[in-house]
Image (cartoon, rainbow, N blue to C red; front, side, top):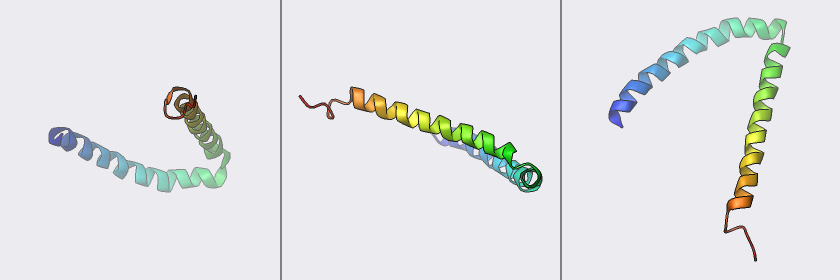
Length: 70
């Protein structure tokens, strides 16, 4: 686990450091000129998360023996 953490943590920190300036400068300029460019991807992500949550709840209700009452 330590070896995996030593590989993953530096990579993640590089991604976060690179994404911060990109979002703060370029992303803000796009949001001021065309806010719908973030609206539709945000809605798509929200609908996908909602769909997966509903699907998971349905599977839990169907397969959880503790919820079944005879």
